[in-house]
Image (tube, rainbow, N blue to C red; front, side, top):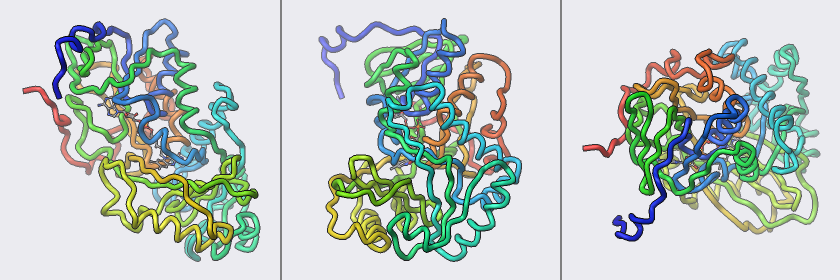
Length: 404
Ligand SMILES: Cc1cc2nc3c(=O)[nH]c(=O)nc-3n(C[C@H](O)[C@H](O)[C@H](O)COP(=O)(O)OP(=O)(O)OC[C@H]3O[C@@H](n4cnc5c(N)ncnc54)[C@H](O)[C@@H]3O)c2cc1C
């Protein structure tokens, strides 16, 4: 790519700010919001390679679920009881903060509750065993037997479900834009960072437009590498998710979001009648990696097959849109916060493992607290880059630095 004399001469002047956030998805937007609250006098620039919400945050299903995995028994086995409880509480706080700090009508937040539906007898049994510990840990769930699931979701061939009253939905792109508007950050679209250089106590970011000099930097580009940034190779892996949207249905068939088959399928109906369906990547896991922004017939066919297998109302309903997005997966399914070497107070963060809407607003408060003070805020240790579950990951590398 070349740039003309005229384009070069008319480039905007270099930008100087207290904090530069690289990546304007839900994570970067949320951090900008909380930085504004913590340090109203700081100048914050929010840079994106394309525009706010261009990545996964503007392409997801808009589920604001409580919890991380599909059932609590699995969470307890994976993380231990105390951490599982902390994570479920963290996601509840996320939704509560969205309601308290923002205008929920601006992004159509709906307190619908949600259903975690079993696709197998084994999953059904785990959901039933999750009820007692969840209730004991303050989450008032109820188990619904298969016949009740069938009548609530107008479905067939499904097992039982957990009804989680705290589940909610939103318009995810409107949410990102609303958070950014409240943050008062300087938004810089079309600012792809092509080099990141810590220099004498500040960080220089190079973009094709101009350079940005910041006292501190936060990189929230999800799985996308940023040249010059040192982070463990493969810490956040790019994994593709695909979805489709039907034309509007004349009647209401789903009253709340449904998350089924261990989270491998998910669907909701919008107030306009359209049904959104996503998932099926588990059937084609080897192909569904990387950054290619495209849908594939095998996954799209699997989504439609799922819909027709379990939901009779889907017969003959036309699909109006299909799309994909890149999620950031981590080794233990939890997001990561790492330090930028040689840049005190600078961090990289992300890897929500397909649950960023349920986590990131609360997570942004954590990031802002880390950047605005030297204290280790509550909860930060859970997401440390050097936690034991991640140390098996590969060597630390500089991400495809262009400097030569
Ligand atoms: C199809 C799909 C459905 C999903 N459904 C749900 C759901 O219902 N509920 C839920 O909780 N989660 C869901 N998720 C996951 C959720 O969308 C993500 O966890 C979340 O959006 C991640 O946010 P982020 O800010 O970390 O990353 P992103 O939203 O991906 O933002 C990263 C940003 O960085 C920018 N960027 C990249 N490289 C550079 C660079 N070099 N310089 C500058 N900018 C750069 C990108 O343009 C992008 O805007 C879904 C994901 C997908 C793909």
